[in-house]
View 1 (cartoon, one colour):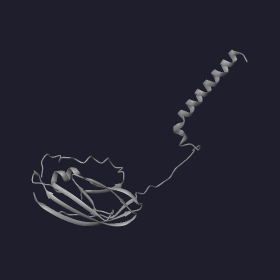
View 2 (cartoon, helix red, strand yellow):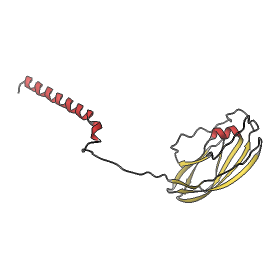
View 3 (tube, helix red, strand yellow):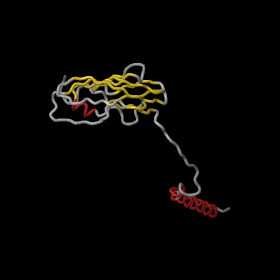
Length: 182
């Protein structure tokens, strides 16, 4: 075969390869809707946490400077033993209204989980099963509230698989963000 014929064959091969490449690339969107499907998938992902009943805590009418303790129970179904994270939600609201806010949660792990504005999450290991959880909140309403607050059914305690997948846990603050000490 002559060098010219070899070059022509090589060029024809490269042109055919380029056309095939463009066809495959351009047709990639249509492959999923054609009869040439390579694979399909169907699945259901269930959380390993199911809250059977929540600890509904009504603090009632609070006064500036008031300190109180509230206790309630919840039932949580854990379908898979492992590590979990308990964390405070609505931290901005808690920080605005309360000069101190601590939560003790028993019944999930081997020891109580203690959360506060200075330690807003706890990691614990638990077993599968239905757990009766006791939530105790100790709070003091700030003396520096300049407005009235009405809050209804605001979540303040969350539970997720560890590591948390909702958002990264914020660093524990060394000093209260609003600038005054208790």
